[in-house]
Length: 413
Image (cartoon, rainbow, N blue to C red; front, side, top):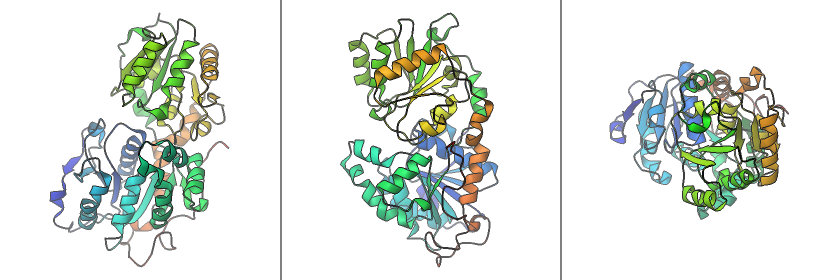
């Protein structure tokens, strides 16, 4: 995919003389290869497919996903590196110049920044914030002391959002409880996946000796090498597996050195490949014998949704939140307790021997068109109607969206 047209803050000195009706700004901190950023790019493309004029606004355009920016989107780089707080002045300048009718942002720091920036602009753009992680766990587990107070900050800031979207019911329930927000204000919308693109990419050849037809069973895990993914538990589980099993982990991150040492200490050298980040992981999905997710916490892991499209059986921890909903309480894969290496090992062996069949319909609620329609239903009438006025405040009647609640998103519950 060719990246969209790049516009820097200096290009925003004049207001857009004729802003397109229905312009939406999709805002995120960076283009790093993380789940929330991938979802934002997919959503931008879905909105473009629906005829919406989309600006993609990022704090920095550095990251592995730079080449995946939709060619039809305009890319605005606020140019303040990874310090989200420093993006406030250029974000206000962007909003005043481009005058989007609505802003859709992801990740808590950027969400708060967008709510704040909108207050400096008239007419005030409509702001939808999206939550992609389990707040109670992510704030508690973070090594950054600022994240420990984030639930209290969000409790105040999110009152200024027009819509709050969570990527799973588990995330929504936890957000309401942890940030003391009315549960009825939080809508659940699942992450989108372009399965036709996944299938096309999976047809590419994969050059790995362990994935040859005559090789033994291969377990695949995909995700950044960070504490959240709990790869140590997966490695300890692998010690219990038969000698013929191999493990490939796709992804990179700050825990690489520690994990490399653990592989050696556990005697798994030659059985585990910390393969690093790859642009196209889908041939690995297609060739693997088991897909494993060992996370301590998630929001709605997109890799698990993508795994539904392949034949390999799935084993995942029943972590907060997402795997329970994606696998529909174990219908489409095996769920094990968090941090239990013995249960994880047993489930992997069982899955390799007795795969769980999955019908094609297991993926339907994650189709990009379905998810895009959910977002369009939640956007205000001002996106396609007359310009918004500053007379209507956040969450008040007149914003043109549907009534609050779970929004009819199917969950399998």
